[in-house]
Image (cartoon, rainbow, N blue to C red; front, side):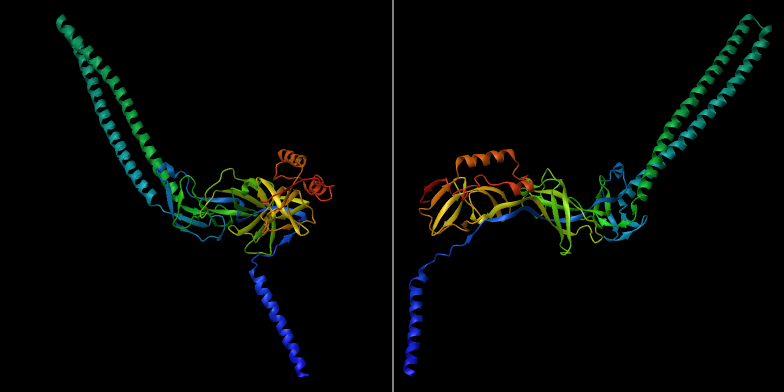
Length: 467
């Protein structure tokens, strides 16, 4: 009995050893990986562009520094103090303090010039008073001289004619000198008035300059224009304007008070995908901080000119997505994930991109036909990151290779009829490939040659190839 049992064990062990030897001799030498197949899927096909964005308020009130500092040749002003970002303020609350050192220097220069002009004006007044006083004294003396000459004329009646003539000449000369002195006095008065008016104009100009600088200096202390939450302004390179930063004289914005009722997600799309983005496209918006919250939006703006962003090797284009929902939890600078719905088709065949192979500018798939393999020409439609729509060439029941078969020698190529390809070429010229048909049309549209038993198989040219 034990002998029979030992014999059974020996036979079983020998069988196992024999199988191991056969696997070692045959199976272990084969390096061919097993073929992986897939079948076309029929249903909804979506083309999406996924990007990361940042929330910003669509509308906001700017908290601005002083305007007009360029008048004083000041181009940038450092921020000395700035309240923390996110602070809720009321109208009139302190927000920021700017560095006054440069404008204080301008004020000192203006005050010195004002003092100089004031001295000139005072000196001109004194000179005018002195000159006009002398002129008035001279007029009085001339009036006395005329009066003396008149008396001399009256007393010369009993003198000889020659003496009378000489006295008369002196009298007339005194009258002329008085008349000329009075005329000169009027001219001196007008001249003094003009001179004082010119200096007074310069004086008023310097006073206005000092007053203007002082008014601007008062605005170096910045207050909130209305109620809201303070959000730091962002520069074009994405950096924030913070304490120690400088604001430009052309755009003296220190911070902003956003309106949270309408939010935008500002994102950037690479130069390849931007060709598929259009205003009005719907967007699925997610929040990294709150994954459970699902929002929607639409594209409202697509930049026409690309820009080089930090940490980016290629040009990107700014795209603004307006969020449809109003949510009190939304805050500026929150990171968003944006899925832009470029196109959506229903009831179409689509296959993985790995099944598509290009030979001489024609697209093929490797199709399994029983134990054989064939290459079937196909016409492609819309494409996304993983799949591509097949307009013609395969059916839902076909088995397609996900990779190139190990042995392609002698594989037959099946080409689509030329009239079928020509029809699709004409359709492509008439339609924007990214616009695509409307969803109802996509449901009703049947591929050309739908009545054939297997699209792309019956009535197609067949060729055997060793490639």
